[in-house]
Image 1: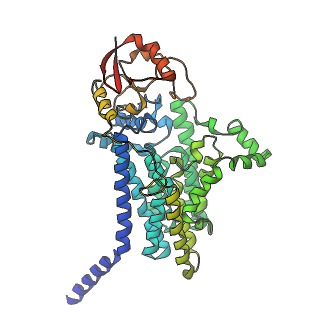
Image 2: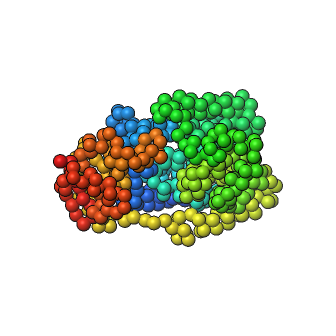
Image 3: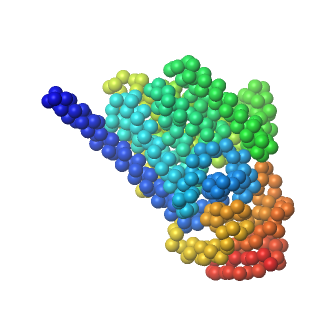
Length: 484
């Protein structure tokens, strides 16, 4: 009896000792970051700092799902899952039954990015057997510029790649195949092109861990991508890939021909413009340590090439969500590389990661007290209260066309458009370049809400339609019109 009691007490002591001060520091860093990001982004949102692209369209799509309706997003003129196969959004729909704040998605996004510190911690501790070094990995993750920029750039489902990719690599490294499988499936559900990472991960698993599981992952992710592109997306929007215009040399066929016949031309394209800076900003926060033993870092090769090949400059800018998937890969890659060197060198390499992380955060990451800052919006600005006064004049079930910052607060309805759509097509429909025509359903718009002062093409658009509407409300900032 006494022996059993001593065993129990010793077990409790060991479990209590497991949670060191470094565990507390890592947890506090993640919590503080999450709370700050949630507060910052919701404040900007309620200060009219967000837009239809890329917040309102997700808010409308998920709200429609929560109402049991097809998620045809009128803010962009296509089905939510015809834009990207982001089925990872489905679990959010029930939250809309209980939480009515339009800031919900920003809180979810901040939590996803913050939770990503957990697999980073677990991988680093597993590889290095050192809580202080694992804490440095958490700092490198949270301070990486791509993470915070993604959190501040409206809302994107891509944010959940930060924890999910970290979790998938953690499962692969430790051969925790149930966790690995769950993480891989969830990664694939974020969007159709995440198969690029999963295929690389499957190849690594086949070579380094388990051939059967790796080949299943590789072939399964390829099959999944084909289904998503050629069955799901083509079935919804008519083409398997809407963004072929982003491919250089005349599209997919031209890119393939150039790759084999003029590789020098492709190489010049890959290093043109700000692309080298983009790669520098991805790797410098870990002091390039991930390249010492690049096995894990190379898991990001296909997505990185996809971004560098693209002519759409957003895809090779650290400020946009396309970069967030590389953060866990690079940080874990650095910890993996350090774990492969002699123990006496690890402290120095981890110190380099810490210095690189903090230095790059100071230069590039829009965190408090850093050199780089982003514009902020205040909910207390007079235009915000005036906007809510104007929006309150419009019934919840009305068809409305509104200024883009207001659509982020009016998206939870079946029909809402970003003015001048539908009076003039702009960024609407499967082909985002189709523009200029007045859409057939323009006369169904019951209300229009616009800034008091209009300029440029928007003013011309409205002057053409103005005769069909009467002013029902106005203040110093906004005017509400109702169809006669």
